[in-house]
Structure formats: C-alpha cells, structure tokens
Length: 172
Image (cartoon, rainbow, N blue to C red; front, side, top):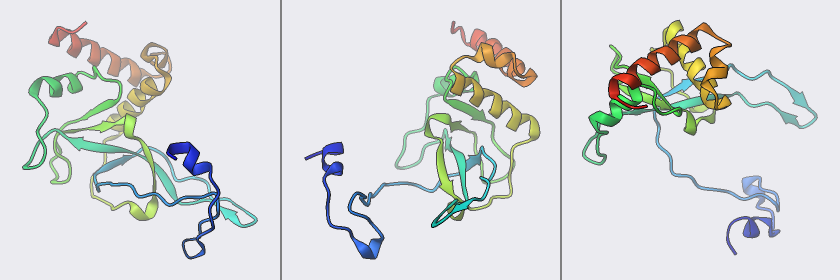
C-alpha cells in the first residue's frame, strides 16, 4: 500500500511517542537556513487539553552562490530574479553582515516554524524592504499584481521597478 491508502489503515498506537492509531511519524530531510519571519506571533489560546504553539510563518532564504556540493545560479537567472520576473522569489541584495549574501526569499517554500527552531541573527530588513516584501508576497498570494497595486503605494513602486527591469532585460 502506498500514500493515502496506507495512512488510512489503522495500526496499534505507539504510546512512548504519543502517537494514536490514526497518526504516523514522518522523517523529513531538512537544512538549517536563514529565514525571514513574515508573520506576527500567534495569539495564545487554550481550550481544555489543547493549546496554541509559539509558531511563525517564515520564508526561507537561498543564496545564489555555489560551493563544492552545489552549482551556483547563472548570471541570467540572477538578473531575472532581481527583475522580479518570478512571482515566487523576492530578491535580497548582499548585506554588510556575514549572515546574508546576495540571495532570494522563496514564497513557494513558506512554512510554519516553531519558535524553538529559530536562531536569532542580528540583521533585519529595513522598513521599506519589508514593506516591499509584503507587497510582492501579496501579489504572489492574490495571483494579480495589478489588483494588489491598488491597495498600496509600495505595490506600485515594486511593479514600476519590475516593469523597468523586465524591459531592460528584453523580456515581455
């Protein structure tokens, strides 16, 4: 049995792991990487035996550079990311701190992370950069950058910047 079929099959609970008969343990390969926290802390709540967790929505950051195990991105790709030709990527210029190289945040990899997994780094986006990130994320989530542009002056600026860069790259 594979996939959903196997998951639906009842099994004996595994009490030491706290698993009920309809739950499974999964193993996921992952890598620690820088992230941008894109949500506020959730409101705390409790109802009977259930409670909230201290979790945040985060957008992971990927660097353009390569190393001995990974090929670096092409200059053409980097220019397209800078021009916001991909709705899932938000360009991040190199930082003066050692924590962030020239890179991009990936909206298609947004995930929930428990507060205990986050490691603080002494860096943050400027208010204008964070507002631009929010505007581009809104464009990604709504699938319509032109509707988003009517809601924010920053959206207008991001779209103007994108149009200028895309034109410079000769992309229509």
